[in-house]
Amino acid sequence: MTRAPIRQSSPTANWRAILFGLLLLLFEVYWVTVAEMKYGSQATALPLFIYPVFILFYLVVINNGLSLFLRLRLFTAADLLTIYVMLVIGTSFSAYGMLQIYLPLWFILPVLLRLKTIGEIYFFTIFHGTLPSILSTS
Image (cartoon, rainbow, N blue to C red; front, side, top):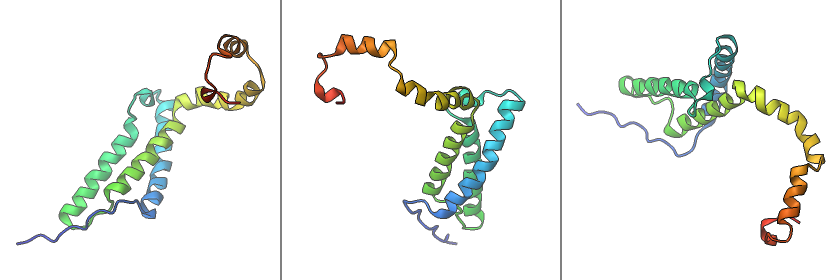
């Protein structure tokens, strides 16, 4: 008994993966927010986010199960990579540290860009004339 060949994966992701990633993103952002705000989980403080890895693991299991039993591959490797990257970016934006660090910085950054700080003046007096012009903006 010969097996039917499985369609080779294309090197690019398709719109189905992006739409599925957006739907998973809604679920995952809700999951991260509830886990970190309600239950005090600090899982996004780890170097590797476990939420997208968990979701990717189940997507791979479902994808391989479908290809083994039904000869149907739901996602290609490019699709899975696209979904994983979308989930990681969504996790980084919905993490607890994002609200603590980057949100206040977003509001204070225009003010900081207009001010000449003491450190900036000190840096200018030390390195003015010693840096090559290619390393500085004019």
